[in-house]
Image (cartoon, rainbow, N blue to C red):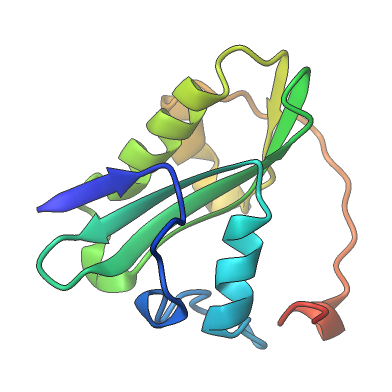
Length: 136
């Protein structure tokens, strides 16, 4: 069974294995945990049999007006089971009292987010790939 948790309390780095699929420079499990702990909001999907985190979403926010969702990931072996959809729904519920909720995604993911109530909009960004692992 999948358990959803709105906190990193009690989560250890070793429970965050195998994320950042396809990244050239993946953050370590320790850095990943710090990313989640430093986020204003986090929701984890945990496989209760293995106690491994199998999916997560986080948001950075001022908790007054706006939030940005930088990361949503589900481990490959758990995809196509509705976990990513559940994570985004729960996060949107968590952020429902804010004026703006933004995220950037690849073109191929736009239909997924559109089905969940998000609207396409233009965006700009910069990536410093040398810091893809984190800057710790």
